[in-house]
Amino acid sequence: MAEKGKIYFVSDVHLGAPALKDNSEREIFFTKWLDFIRDDVAGLYLMGDIFDFWFEYRKVVPRGFTRVLGRLADMSDRGVPIHFFTGNHDVWVFDYLPKEIGLTVHRDTFVTEIYGKKFCLAHGDGLDPNDKGYLLLKKIFTSKKLQWLFSRLHPNFAFHLAHQWSKSSRLSKMGEEEEFNVKNESMYKFAENFLEKEWIDYFIFGHRHRMVNMEIKDTSRLILLGDWIKNFSYGVFNGEKFVLNKFTE
Image (tube, rainbow, N blue to C red):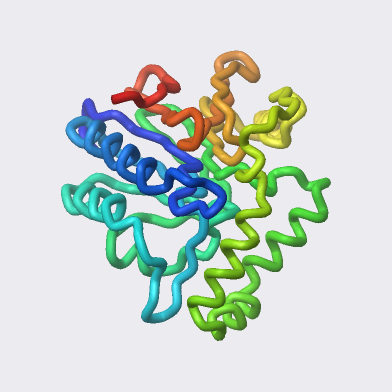
């Protein structure tokens, strides 16, 4: 890892989302951001839902995303570590991206140290132990048996089903206002409880499509990374300070 390089974090790009009409434009814009960080990136954390849907058959992967995958492969080839967190939309990432690009896949909450600071990282879904319905759904989606059964479907039919499901998600309602109080969010409560057991300097999550950079306790901070649908946002840590930015040309 470069001594003076920056660590970048991004989430909820939702590449290929059938509920959105600007997928090509957003992919090109996202690749411009990857080009923008190219010269000073020392580590990249893709914090979930980078793809709106991803499923790998043994010999088949989703069509598209060529520009993004090419940029990531180039970055990895230059020795930049890339960490990919599975989200609720791209939970079915298996070995294609690690083998072809060289990124590291994380499926659970990950605690690590970066430039002497402790980070707790996750996409952010499933952190509420009282949300039994969602936890059951997540358990079903991560079932090896279900994944095997789904892989028996023809890709055209399987992806059609997945895209129909995605169209009914909250992405299709992004224009509607919803009440948001970060202290009522499961991610905030998770961070509060975690701090009772272990000190963390930065809790970083995606999932909620909101931008938040706030102190929880003393100097511990909660970061919600926003998205690439309305905010076009990302986080950057230079070893001393964490900043949330919006990317503009």
